[in-house]
Structures are given as C-alpha cells and as structure tokens.
Length: 350
Image (cartoon, rainbow, N blue to C red):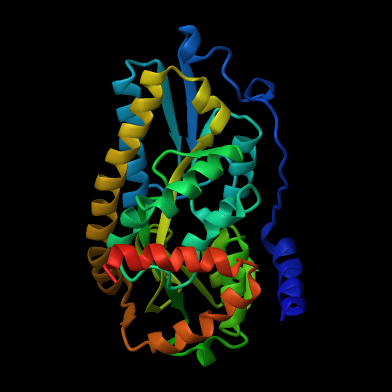
C-alpha cells in the first residue's frame, strides 16, 4: 500500500508542487525572522501568527481575535500579526521555522508536531474523542499537562496545552462513502502527517499530500477523488463546488494548539508570559464556541449553495474498526496508549 502512496505522491508532486521539510534546533537570535529586540529588554517584539486556515472561516476569525487581544493586553509590547491561507508556508515549514527560533506562531494540530515531540500525536489518533467537550478536559488532566511540559522541553511551547476545538473532520467526495469499502482505490487528499496518511491506507485509499489551497483544483482535475477536513474549512475552500457529498464520519474531533518557540516564550517577562497564557485560555473558549456554532450552519449553506448531499448513513462503527489499524502501525507505545485511555476514562467518569 505504501508503494501506491509513494507513486501517487510523485504524480501529485509534478502536478501540484509538493514540499517537504526537516528540522533542527537553534537559538532564537540566529533566525532571520527574529526581532531586533525582546520585550524583556524593554523593546516591543512582533510575532507572526502564520497558519494555513482559509480566510473567512470561524477558526481564522478566532485567531484574528486572539492576535488583537495579545497586542492590546500587552500595550503593544508584543504585536501579533496574523497571516492566513498558508501565505507564509505550509504547516511543516511554519513549525520548522518556529522550532529553529523564528518569532512566529502556528495554530497546529498535535500530529504535525511529531518530528519534535512524537507523543503529542496520540491526541490526534482516529476516533480518540467522543465529542469536542472532551478536548479541553483531557488537556487539564495530569496526562495532558505532562504532554505540554515535555513538548516545551523539546523546544515548542503550546500556549493552550492542545485544548482548542478545530472542528469535526468529515469526508467530502464525488460519491457516497458509507463503509471503508467505498474508499478502496480512491485517491484521498490528506495533510502531510503520518497519522492521517496511515488512516487513508487503513481505509483502503491511496493517500495524496497536496496543500489544502490546491485541493480544489486537484479535485476538479481528477487528481484526487476525496478530501477530509473540518466542515468550516471545507466550505471556506469551496470544496462543495466540486464534491457533491459530505459524509458524516466524525473520524476526528480535531484538536489544535497555539504553538511558539519555547526559548522565546521563556525569554519574555513573567507578566507577558501570563498574558499569552491567559489570552490563549480565552481563545479556547470563544474559538470552540465559534467553530461548533458554525458547523450545522455551514452544512446547510452547502446544501443551499450547491445542492450537496449530507450523508448521515455512514457505518461509523465499520469506519472506526478499520481505523484501529493506525494504532498497530503508527509506533505509539502501549504505555502511551494506556495513559491516553486512562485520561479519557477520567474525563468520562468511568
């Protein structure tokens, strides 16, 4: 199956321009993106909040609100500049620059932090959460706090502790998807992270890593047959114009976090650190509500605008059963899986 995925990647690379990144650690001051001063020395700093979410969706609106709040609450000692639509690079590129010391932030899912701290990706395993209400609760368990602390030691500070709801991820396709059999042989656009590539393979599809901004054209030209993403992002990227079905799989109640370089965070005055943490906590509350409120409204817009069929007849148990293969091949230790399950049991009162 991986041979098929690699062959498709080569095709997509020629058609859409594929980018891959590595990583290494350096001091913040060595980065070309670093500010000439720091807030600790009494000079204002600018941090670029770069992300790949499309303009106009609830996530981007919430990130803009966070950027404005930090700039206001620090009296301009920290200025957050927000850049959407992947104009500053894809997630791998952004995270690598952050790790290497750039004065940047990303709104990243935990799977994309795997090159720097692999254990965080367990929070992005398929069918991990039963509802978005569990996301912030897991982040507040001893397990969630351990992951945040160890990721900081590895060089990346997750301000909200991976507690932000990014949306329920669904599949949009050119035909109904009810079981894994319906995905067999289809070219499935996935983000460039191991968990989601493995999930596509577990369902029998051929994963293709194409930037989200190029996915509309790839679907239109038949390079890929289906795509998954949060509902709001799918609509904001006009996927409903080229895919007549949205299949309610809920394979991820997706979690994201506000990520910055740990050394830069530690270099800030204590009051600025606290403002960042407080504003990140506020962001979790309003962004979660905004994203959740948006979902049903956007589904209705897809129906009204382009006649999309909302397929609620998916055999979720069959999809979930097939997805368990990810736990077998991904490389998470049984100890980590047990810890994660214990944290879930704790928040569920089991």
